[in-house]
Length: 287
Image (cartoon, rainbow, N blue to C red; front, side, top):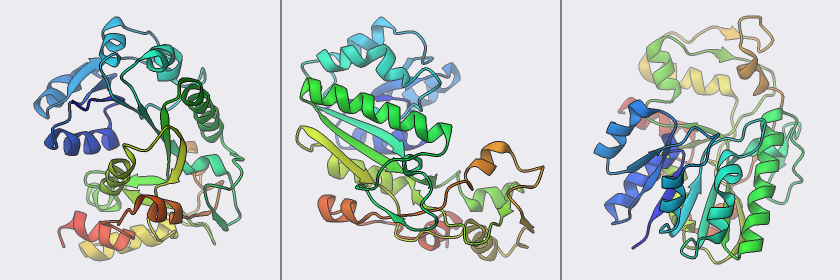
């Protein structure tokens, strides 16, 4: 039986997990939040509590029967929590043949608005990106030493039902941050799941894919289009350097690039359900 163990049953992992459960997979995984356990069980998952700091025997035992492992916990200042606590168990497991890692296109750093692909040198300009490069390298080393398949998914901004411009506009929290020439990249959560399914049985070795849609776009245009769909006034433009813009939000405007998904399409045959934010926001808005 195919068994995917997910470190971090969050937004993307549960979208994938629900699909696999319907196909007959078993999907155990971790959450740091005890209040989420009951809901995860109701959805068909087998949750374990993991706070990212201490290795627990029940998780190590569950890994011994896993066939696949998906990593979606972001690294912290001390590195990747799953690698730190369970790397040896994953490497030693005779049943695990495939490892998937959710990384970020932030590893490329700034390209001054130009295109990047999987052959582009990683030169992250943020602490988040630097931590991701370190984590990627750690999993690459483990996969090569253990002879397992490793698929690294470099993800841009993730959106979908409950997490989109439509939801922000309805909640009154949307910010139309404007920086001339700035382009951002995004992908619908369902298309991430599609890309993982298409690559979940790749052969041993290291495989890297940018999982993004077809249209790098100015972030203010996404908000404006969402407002148009809802028939709402468009929020006023805000400069990213304004004092009321959080440091986290501001950091996303440090780097400017267009991310190519050509390898994903060519090698995995992925057909995006939402090739641009236009199709994605229409679907979320129910149009």
